[in-house]
Length: 90
Image (cartoon, rainbow, N blue to C red; front, side, top):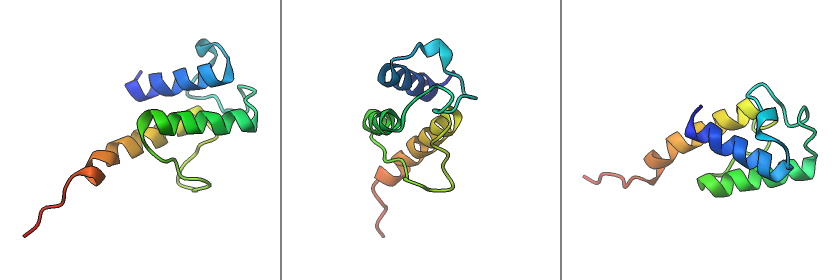
């Protein structure tokens, strides 16, 4: 399990008040009986934890499934250092 996956699972478990053992990559937030307001809170907590912004309604990002959330976070975290790096000037 990656550090991102561990953190995402932990945030989902804490915010939805469910046992982390019930969460798998194959789960959807709906499968976990997470209501839409709780899902929004989970997204906010993930964004705050990783200092990223998950796209809203972007077809390239699946934020309804646990696997999709983990993959989206991993992608955004991987891109972050490159975006934050100073550009070379000639």
